Length: 486
Image 1 (tube, rainbow, N blue to C red):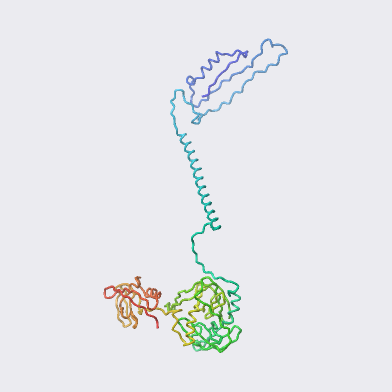
Image 2 (cartoon, rainbow, N blue to C red; image 1 turned 180 degrees about the vertical axis):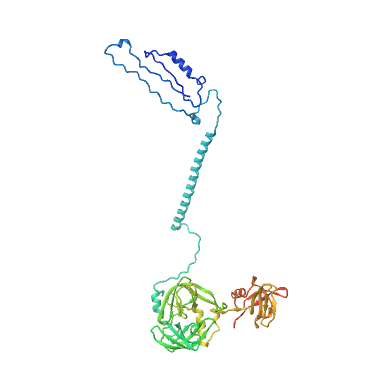
């Protein structure tokens, strides 16, 4: 509570009503003796008139300065008084109050200082680490660039060194060099009671008119018309062919022909240039040239018939040079203008840029035999017949009833592949019999004939497979040597 003090002033500035003042002060200065104020009651401050001091009598003359009238102070506006709450550190205690010391504020202050200190320390550590990493990286780059430090890394890169006499050609030069050695072949084939024609491509192998092409181009042909790059036409004769390797040889009666230069398909490198020249979509497009790269070498390719049965396997060159119907039998050429493959097929359907060629090294072995004998027995280097296990079978489920061709019926005691027939002359005929149920091949469970074919098709004639089968209530295991289709 604020103290209200009344001061009395006499006519003389030197004479102050000490007694009255002392009394007023002593009555109001002690809050313990002040009259009790009711809650909500506003304490009023008494109005005190302040009188200016009068001059002494020896100043009293008519020339004396005009006295300043007494100043009456404006009565202060009385407002409701709310209890004033001081900050903790400013609150006053009664003289007889006991002090309770608390270090809570100090602890909080110290904690803040510590947190600020730890944050600064963490930032300093992070920046130091980042700087160290940058410094080490910079030093490593500088050392490697200057040769002061060389990492122990071995890389094998296939590089062909070319010089002005290397023989490497541009695509335009390749086309100009090889096109004269590429021919279009129109084949007349029977079609029901009439005939139709098909078109393919061939490669001139010799000056006297031997031309290599695909077997499927000239197979069943009644006549052959060969068109050279200069539009000269010849009738050709069929010399011989090999269905397995898809190679054939025809001949025209001519001389002085530009024979193609042959390369070495064993030296091919994935990624090098590949150019194809052929007759896609008919003789009107003869000499079409496309380019790409060697996408893969020695690609193991399985060939299937229309029923989904694998008929053979071939080892081919894969390229992304555009290959279309009519390119069959044409050349795949390297960057020196040398024939390194004979185009044979492409992957159809939803696939683009996947064409295949027969490697020229293996192809020439077969074609030379055909030239000498009209047939070949050397196609194993390019293609192989599908391996045979020597059974006819079908999948059955446990409890399923089945009927053999002779009318015999039965109920499958287990799930597996039921043998319906065995092929005489193959190893399986000596170890398996009709009614056996195969449950595993090479340790893999099988329950239909396609499971068995998938495993066998990844092998070659002469390889072996381990068969687990069920017979007369017992499981047995045997090893069978695969045969080949004759």
